[in-house]
Image (cartoon, rainbow over all chains, first blue to last red; front, side, top):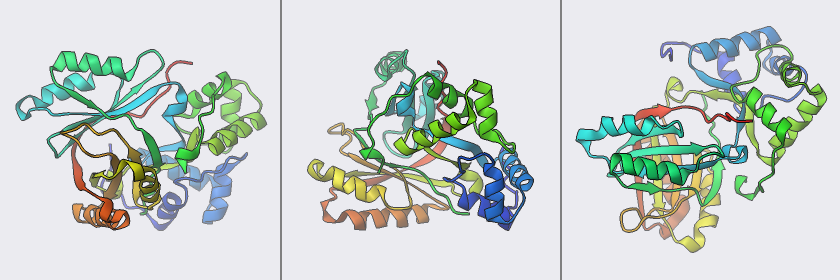
Length: 154
Length: 167
């Protein structure tokens, strides 16, 4: 999906560096961005389309804070023995509420995000996974968020 | 600072806007007009609602979202810190303000296995780069740090965007 050999030109780089957080809300946002970059509106749109196709960008648009969407969110971790790691990963991933799951180097070696809509709760999902896998889940819902936002310079 | 924002309720029209745009903004000359037309509201109202959602933090940002790996940021280190609870908010705000920290949270400890209460995510083109960044965090936190670890991700097992399904 990701074209690792894709060469970004200087305009692609400026586009990515300048608009990770600032697509304007106005009638013709891409025209405005084009003015700032010194290219045409059509060129801006085609470049974004291309960067999405190449897998350089994963999305172009608003990032919503899931907390406001009526659901609940948590980060949880487990200690999974190596010999059953992939089996457990499949079981955990099978839950639609698991939005992300990462293998990390630590005794707590499986870390996943549980994102529930208003029909289920993270607690229910945790209980189900614990019962199904026989493993203990360390639930770490945030107590406080200080910052979320990633800027990657190219 | 995100933590200072209070939770604001979204209404039915906001939910329609979220549903229509959470996958991305239309790539055409007048994307907001298109979204407004799709959900049957006035274009000015749509823009005003989205500006408001941006102001209060329901929309974190509107922008291009790069794929870390495609840009060469292959090292992902979750740094976790054991710091005194009575200073956690001051320390968290300070670390969250560092430009290379992408996520910063206070999370519960699980004693005795897990003594860490401050999480700061960093990304780099190599583990060395991540370690330099973690050193900067350590410097910023000073001598209150009792313990720290970096948990590198070695495999993505699942990754989907959060999506609002019900309206």
